[in-house]
Image 1 (cartoon, one colour):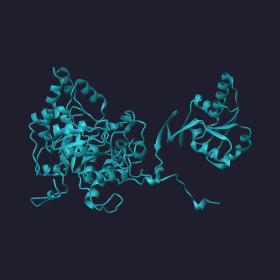
Image 2 (cartoon, chains in turn red, blue; image 1 turned 90 degrees about the vertical axis):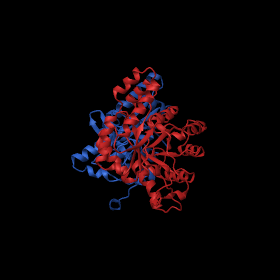
Image 3 (cartoon, one colour; image 1 turned 135 degrees about the vertical axis):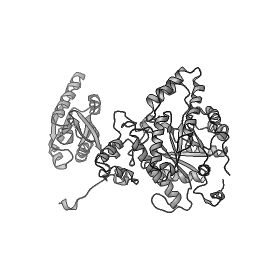
Image 4 (cartoon, chains in turn purple, orange; image 1 turned 180 degrees about the vertical axis):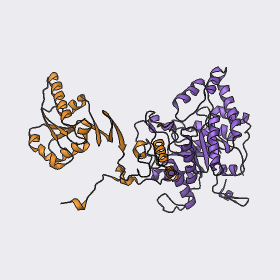
Amino acid sequence: MTSDGARQAGREWKTESSLERLFAGNEFVVTAELGPPKGASATNITENSEKLKSYCDGFNITDNQSASVRLSSIAAAVHILRQGGNPIIQVTCRDRNRIAIQSDLLGAYSLGIRNVVCLSGDHQSFGNHPTAKNVFDIDSVQLIALVKKMRDEKRLLCGEELKAEPRFYIGAVENPFGEPVELRVMRLAKKVKAGAEFIQTQAVFDIKKFEKWMALICEAGIDKKVNILAGVLPVKSLRMARYMKEHVAGMSIPDELVNRIAKAENQQAEGISISVEIISQLRKIAGVKGVHIMPVGWEAALPEIVSRAGLSPRPRVN
Amino acid sequence: MIIAEQKSLQEIDASVEGAKRVLVVGCGGCVSVCLSGGQTETEVLAMALRLKREVAGTPVSTAEITLERQCDPEYVAKLDEAVKEADCILSLACGIGVQFLAERYPDTVVLPAQDTKFVGGTLEHGVWEERCGLCGECILAATGGICPVIRCAKSLLNGPCGGSHDGNCEVGQDTPCAWVLIYHRLKRLGREAAMDEISPPKDWSKARDGGMRKIVREDLRL
């Protein structure tokens, strides 16, 4: 998209992001997560991008996911751009202070990146350098406000004017399953107030619990102010299901689901079917504007999930 | 108070290696209250060191003095005579005491017998917990008297991260999430609406990030 695309049919676009246009056009949006490799080669990123770009509207590029060192999200995003994909960079507050974050955002925009997701970041104790110092100079809500300030006020956090502002479409994340749930609603409202335009949630397995959270979100009118993409995570094996249930903070996985995978003849096929069913249930929930698929290393599952969910082909954005 | 924990006897012994006369100095301040560096602990440590050395065949003599505080030059000065008879000083104070001793006695090796852990309080006899991050600009008025700077592993200022679950921190399941504590407390006080406000980025220049801090009170100077 060119900067001419900023005006379309009399509408004033905030950004050049295709996601903004898709949401405005009431499309059911599909984003997919890609984790950069632990190495200096972008081969897996470029291959995945090439194979998967027609099955989603954008790729989330994680920022040193699980606090483990990976190829940088901005570098990976540039590789995706070269493949014709639409990258959404994740930015965490764990490893960089306000100076580095703003500098990286300016650099990312200059390289053609148009979407940012702002997160706190997993604590370093979960990663491969648990003795590292953490930064958390600013938190995720403050980061959202910072990106918005750079874009809408054309100013740095300190107030100094920018010669050219980075016009990012701003995303954030939320975990609908952390108790107390009302605190999660408050927190999301705060992220929206700070400037978040789309939200990607933690993976949904417990539809009932997610519905309750969405009902609270709609009751508070938040769904009208932000585009919510529900998280979908294809479970590849029983081992993975059990691991997530027991070890991943903030995940809610019903026993029935674990049992279903346990009884399946082909656990991978069952995992894909479960994801397809979850997507179909999510589409019926008021306020859900799309899905965010997190294959965590099982990228090959994406085309089948998206196709069987009836979400392929993806709409074209002009 | 400052909470400190004694280093292992092995590490302390290794650090004073070669010394024949060790001046073991306790502190009557915080470390005395948290039972790691007061008079009793000082005498016990000196005795343990002597015994260990005797068994090893490299005996050491010790002298023990516990000062009112080691973070005050007027008390530290009381060591002037004893230091002359010592090959090294072993301090059971926090890191502040060790440095005040090192500053006063530039020609004598001063060694720490403790690891200075945190600023906190006593939960029950034998249990202490961190409470203050010494950030230099207290925000407790806005957070219901519960500090997210030190009690949240990420020092978040706008509510819990996605890893908070059932009131627990993602880092340690036996550690309460500071923001859930804050929420319940504010709710009880009818002030939870305060959490809707976006807290702006904190001024960390008032914390240790701004360089070593110093306070000068002109009204108190002589």
